[in-house]
Image (tube, rainbow, N blue to C red; front, side):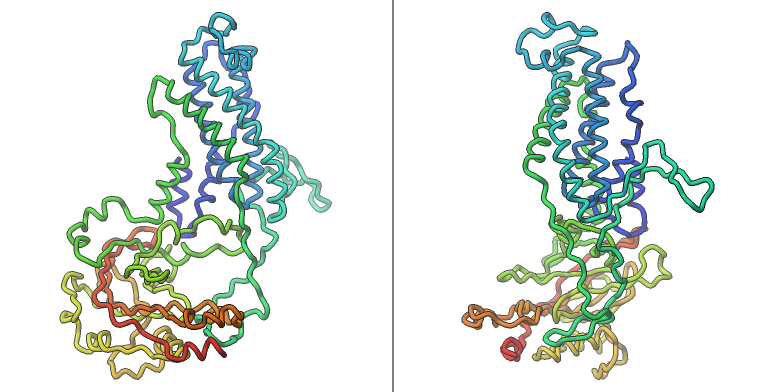
Length: 513
């Protein structure tokens, strides 16, 4: 448990949930000889059985994670752990009875017809047989995991595995070659490695072909992995038998579920604390308000040269951005607020709040200072006059290209001819207990405009429906009320005004071009 906890307190490299499960593998590092060694004759049945049941629960959780993880080392690790665990359980069962299969499948009086190494109660026999049947189910997984390991070898390099105790590798240059140990806790090297660390200086231009940093470069497609149904069925059956065993132990609730623990730690890493909504309950009773945890933008990005199952729900799916309005025809304007900068080095790094939008969406914001969020209302009487007039009277362009030019003005701060004594930007320096005013414009552009592809004949017949643009123009404010050591902030937000939906007049021209 402590390994998982401390791994989550590291700076926001934001390992995914599958990465956390790999840390659990390190807890299964005891030698096979140690697990299979004969225990004292006066061993406590409940002590040994509870240990094996918990190990079985942990192993099932690791196997379930390995089934949907593209890492070959994780699959290889659980394959070895399955062998060790099933042998350990068999050794325990055989010490109680030389024929556990006959004992647990006879359907007769077990205590009278079959000799046991020690007198067992009815509950102990139920635990004994539940362990046996669960173990038999898990043995069915060995060929499945072996087959899946070969498939994982199509994604990442599967190196030859040294002995558990280490082995020397011959080296023509070194007189004494170093001892190489297995390192299954590390991710296997994907074949699609050496991804360039190129950050786009500005958002792509919609409706126009633009140069890229690397000509003709296409980023690798992440694999789509689903667990085999037969494996899931087997695991479900094994868990059912283990659940039957757990209720027979004299101490209730003595077993931990690794998946529940992982879910709790995941919420601890990415979500608000459970008591925070209670702390700000009075504010949250107001209409169009909410509370949200703003994460560094690295939380939503896949690290370079790593594999991820694209079917697994990512951070933005598990903890979605707050909705600013009711969904309309699949269009859901949201507060996609993120932190840009290095979250691990404190205030000196200059973390900034920014909104991560797509297409021609854009926004701009200003730091109002320590202005109470409750003091803001739709007419912005508590805001300086020049800022108030700009945020209330701003009119977005009505042409696609002009919208993108406008977005670059707010991103760069250049060519702003608005007769203001300050530059209005798309982001702002993150400060605790400051209030930020935001004007957010979002558009749901047709897919053929975003992708630049030509219309099919069927799409041209339904061109009128395609041109129905959905958009939003929202004035809101947010206030960070807590900063964590990982760099994330808890914010309160409030929608102040919803302006008329902005339109793009040359959308038909853009589609037909």
